[in-house]
Image (cartoon, rainbow, N blue to C red; front, side, top):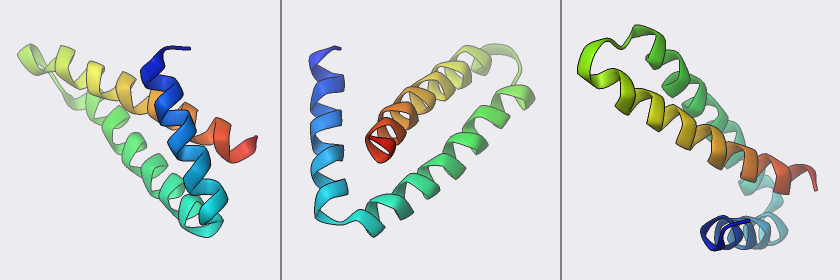
Length: 72
């Protein structure tokens, strides 16, 4: 695990423990946002395609960290 991912994980765990419902709401909203970003890749062409793919990959990685904490 990279130090950046560990920092994100540590902060996410702290927020989940401090405010579980707020954390759950945030995860749900971030999941919705991620779905929108991932779907945008399908509609993106040309020069913006790699940027859209990178953004989608980034969102999916962050979402996986958030959900790992949520479920753990």
